[in-house]
Image 1 (spheres, rainbow over the protein chains, first blue to last red):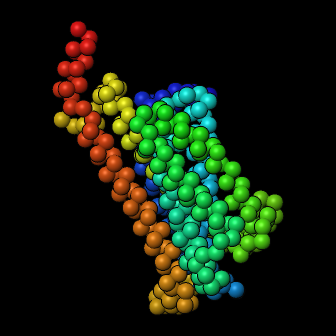
Image 2 (image 1 turned 120 degrees about the vertical axis):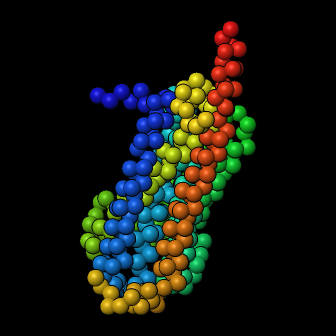
Image 3 (image 1 turned 90 degrees about the vertical axis):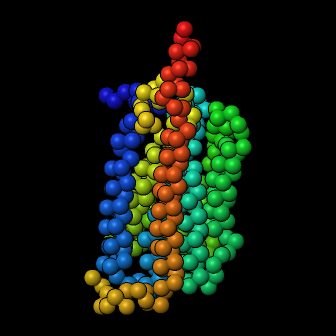
Length: 245
Length: 63
């Protein structure tokens, strides 16, 4: 059995993350290129939306990521609060900027898809509004953390806000069922067969997998930066010899 | 391959600004994030204490 606690201290996590991050990035580039190739070169034209539907191969993966990253961040925030472990709070902080970026991309690609299909860049319906609130949550959490001088107190305050904001995730996800929205319902669901051609689904899932790999890689690298910044006076960081003489 | 020519591909059936606007901004955002991250890594390494400083300080506290 893997001793998970062994990897829960910064000094063992740091070199492991450094070894894993490049492989996740390579996987992201390879899988993402394949997914976009299938989506942009092999997938057929949509009967209703013509070629404009191809935005789906970006919009759905970045929107999923914007929500998943928040859930993972909330998980680490909760672990950090419960066990007072340094590394979980660092992981939560390492995820926030990437989550904010994917949320912005979700709104951006959504606007560019909405304009030709609905005739408007933006509408204050439940799905779009709750996704905008998600962006404000990410920004709010990062701003709160950077406004508090003491790192451990900043972690705790950020973790609390993260956990309060988690209520927004089911609201985003189910908004298209709970309210009448201009936004269409889910393209893929666990309970019924997908309402799209297999090749389109394959492209979308590959790009989503690539987004996961990208996020893992970037979060590991950012966590390493946070570790160096916070523990620079410790003996183990000194022994890493990152600063070449 | 579903396209007959490069021009047809880039035209995206009239949806070019929307499709390419989505793809380009997505790729730019990813590249910018990676660039900012590599700058942060360089900066956090440069802020590490100098080897000599660290060793002197440690010797002082241990004696």
